[in-house]
Length: 137
Image (cartoon, rainbow, N blue to C red):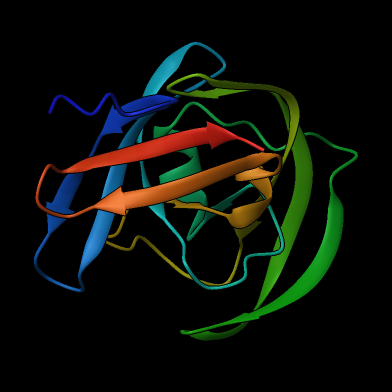
């Protein structure tokens, strides 16, 4: 039988090192690989360093909030603010909360795409097909 998958699917790249699922996103119209964060991130997108955020075309606004955030790599001072638009597959959001860690220098990893971004969507990661199946809740 031919079972039709319901919903949408987006491809991802699997990085063996650190077992990372990386999706192609767009931040303010600019292509950006983001790493799915299965942990609990305080923001829609977390940039691990200022140089990284700048590479993604992110300029920290003067009215960004100062905050402290703990993560796998320890505690750090972060700037929290919103970007106009982030798109991943069928999910297209305006006014997405992002954070930039100001304590770390360049890191090799991609920025983290947090749970908050998938609000209202159910996702299922298919490791064999290298696809993420999305279903509107």
